[in-house]
Length: 61
Image (cartoon, one colour):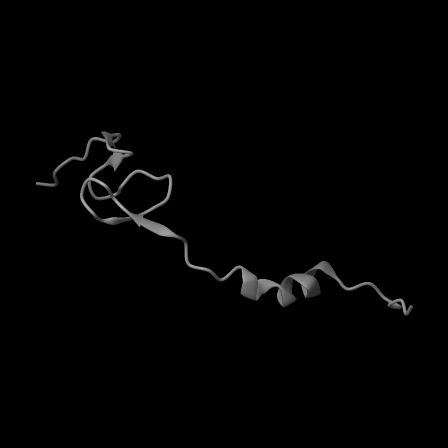
């Protein structure tokens, strides 16, 4: 079985694998207001997480 004469560098390996990392994050709809949010994060629009108020939103006046 053939063996490579020289080892591939880490940089060269990483360049070959970059297409696997280019995915958009999965989003879910907020159960309170329906805005798209990232999983396991507080909704940026209303401040709710799992149906409970997690962050009090302030009105900009």
